[in-house]
Every structure is written in structure tokens, then in C-alpha cells.
Image 1 (tube, rainbow, N blue to C red):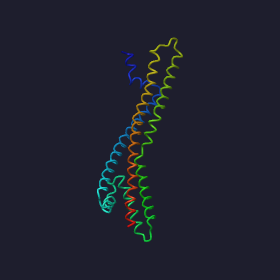
Image 2: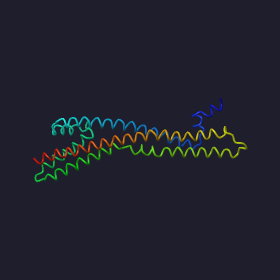
Image 3: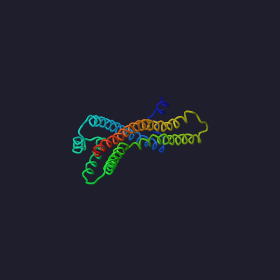
Image 4: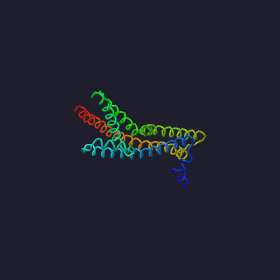
Length: 226
């Protein structure tokens, strides 16, 4: 019974050496933060996809561009990513078109630059915290391995003063060291899975926004050319 209690997970963590405890603390904090960002990005990307679907349905459903522009500009806090790209491009288009003597190329170049700048801002916002997930996913196993190596080293050093080494003497030290590796994997695996999934979703969303900018530019160019 005593051996079972000494080999319990909580006991092993509490009896670990200070460096191993420090490693475990880092991994635990990284795991909590990565799960926090995982849920934040999950809701953010789902909302972005939903807003994009809604705006595309409205835009390609034959809505009046001026009406859509005024709705988005009057309520920017309710606008989605693609709506803000549209608003930036159409606003610049209207400004340049009012200027006398502005050529078609000047108008369209300014419109595309405005949409591109707005697009980059939106993508940067959606990409926030993904770098942290990538870092946790790539670094955590090595941090856990460091704790494991340190714990095993201390476990074998403790045998130097023992005349006859037994498995019961070295097992607790090795077990507490292996917990660090397990915690490193526990922090890394969800972060890697989430990073790969969110990167894929963001790439699809970015492609949709880029396609919209090209198609919208063609619509505006045809209006100027009339």
C-alpha cells in the first residue's frame, strides 16, 4: 500500500526535484494558454466564416452596392472581415472617381491598394496567437524531455551512495521524470492539431477574400469604363 501511494501521480509530482517542478510548471502554463487561444481562434474563425458566407450571399444576390456600403460604414462594429475589405475598396473607389481627370488605371490601382491593405489587416488579426500555438507544439516536447533527462540523472546520482541498487529505489525518480515528458506531449499535441486546422481554415478564408477582391475589382472597372 505504501509503495502504491508513493507511486501515485500527485505524490510523484510533489516529490519531484525543483528543476523538474519548474519544467512541469512551464508546461502546465503553456498548456492552459494554448487551450485558451485554441478556443478563442475556434470562435473567431467560425464567426469569420459565417460573416463571409452571409456577405457573399448578400453581395452576389444582387444587392445595391451603395446600400451595402452605407450599411457597413454606418455600423463598422457589426461588419465582418470581408465587409471591411469591401468598404475600404468601395470608399477609395468613390473618392477617386469624384476627382476630375482621374484615369481608369489610377482609380483601379487605388481601389486595389485600399482593399489589399484592409485584407492584410484582417488576415493579421485572424493569424494572431497562431504563432504561439506553433511554438508550444514544437518546443513543449523538448522542454518535457529536458525535465525527464534531469530527473533520470538525479535518480541515478542518488544510487551512488547505495551499496545495492534495486528497482524500487530508482523507479520513483524515473517515474516522476517521465511525467515531464507526458506533460510536454499533453501540451504539444492539441497545439499542433489546432495550429494545422486553423491554418487550413485561414488559408481557405484568405483565398475567398482574394477571389472576392479580384471579382469586385472587375465589377468596378466595368462601371468606370462605361
